[in-house]
Image (cartoon, rainbow, N blue to C red; front, top):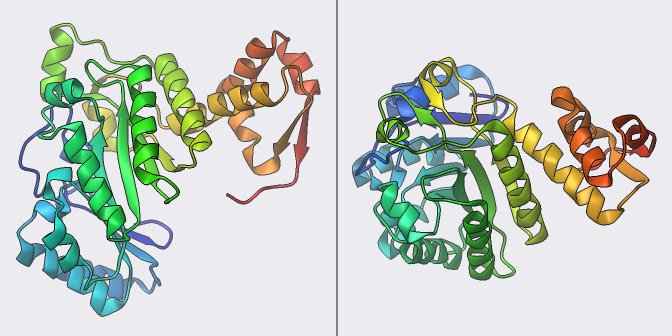
Length: 315
């Protein structure tokens, strides 16, 4: 629970298979609450929540009676609801049923659209099947978010960019939101075994570069990128055995992306940076600033002299 969003973590509830990288209980450290507990927590909090979010499981794969028991809370309290789910649990009947509830967004765990990568990860669908599910959601006029990953077995930065192009073609002028998650190796998962068999997870530097290029391309294509990186929890920190695990990965990726964007705008500056975004360059050991200096072939000190802070902008 944070701000005005009440988040419920279903921790693999409804999931019909276990993907090679997945252990939602390690990521969230939570056991799914009952509908009664959710209602009690919301009504006793004294907070006016703007959204109830069901994450960490495959919501529309749950038995309909269980889905309805959760969704009736949102309807009774007149609070819009967001859910994450599996592409193969989306169809006409499901979307028509959901229309009687205040659904603010449907998030699909896409990971990749490359069939070979999806097969290696045991996702249980093809890229075309995922695209069909997304098209159904958009055609029914729901807000859609695609959850993508970087660093999966067999995946490359190029294949991630190709995924973005396919998503852009699908959405056309319609809006679509993205989340970009790093592939982390968690203890006890099949991916942990695969690492011992030769799979190499991304380093932090590789993830920053890959994510930065992907973010830049996503913005160019008109996507809204809602989140980059995973929320840090004590259980996640204890479970990670490999991959780009860093609580500020999203900030670092945004800094790298900003540096690349500034270079495109002006090879040697000067550069104007909104006050609320200057930390993308100056934070985390000045990673973004150093990237900008390297790309401009300038010293860090000279690069700083060519940066001017302008008023805050609203996203």
